[in-house]
Length: 126
Image (tube, rainbow, N blue to C red; front, side):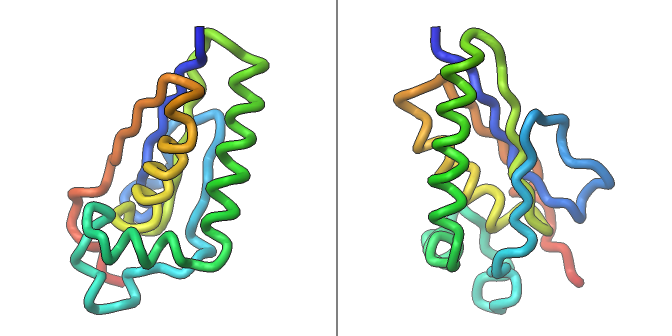
């Protein structure tokens, strides 16, 4: 039976701790769409946000590497649940976009569940 992978996107600014996970992917070093006023109030559900995140230098490579790593891990540990937390500052732009992209890359390989913990929370003003 394929491994079950649970992916949770989140914002580091909403909690002192990331969700419990076997792997935490920290997207804070990558360009934040929040800096663009036209994207700030949007979320990963908006095509403009997804486009901005997925064209960020290094993001596609990070997604591909994470998917490959999770496939290797799943081959070695069949039958158990593996938890992945994908975080950015606010949890509305980068984290949910990347979490969904990682899940897309694993759909034919494992049973994948994605939750966006902070997607609907208010914009964090910094």
